[in-house]
Image (cartoon, rainbow, N blue to C red; front, side, top):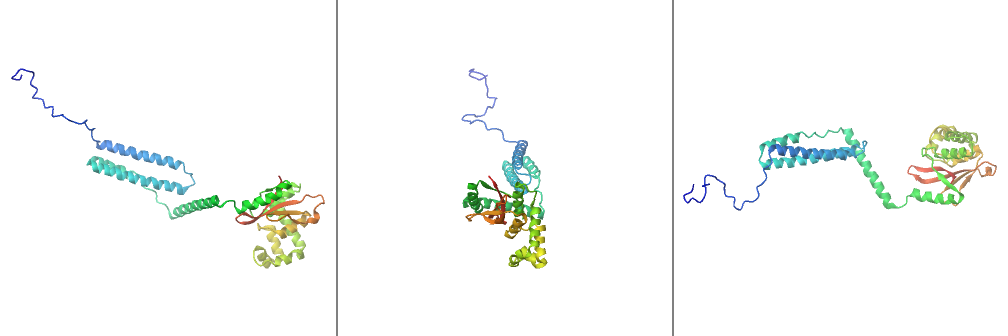
Length: 304
């Protein structure tokens, strides 16, 4: 009891001086808690990277390799931050846990020279495709589109339209076979090639002057090495592109008028016109200089 008897003596308890105290600060993060948080952050980063990889096509090796590299860079950055946190806190246990976490990240697989070259080629192809797309977007209609529009303008009033055939070296013969089949004749591109070669063999004087005027190219080389028969073998047994000489040969072999529409021509070029009107349908084709980048191309022309 106190001497004055005013109340109990509490001087034996040390409550401290709490006058003006701020709100008590939260307890500091322990080493185990820091290590756990670091693991969670790393896992979240890896999960996000996996989701990104799932959005890349399986065949896109370069894209997947770039995503892997991006993940490795992000993991390194995260590890550096974790190291700074652990070092700044002065907690040796947390630093040790962080070091263990950092080494747990798998190293990026080493790529072979062939794989590196393939990735470089794929990247260059993507960049090239993008440049072409950008150029097309700013270049307006292509030469192909302009040419096709001009040919279509000739055909539309006649109720005709272009029917595309494969660009494989046989386009002339495929186009002619297309029209022969439509007229009820059993024929394919090989039949048309044989018909042209056989007619040229049977009428050498009609074709040799034109063939001998060729100074270079497959036709000139075939003629130089094998004479007329060498050229006929080229026509019959290869995928060499055909032109006006072969159109002439087929027109006479099949006794058909062949009409070829082209851009800039006021009317179609007719070959075998003497056969028109004998009851056999005319064979209509279109000739394109800019249809493919590989060069000139023939298509069939059909009723629209």
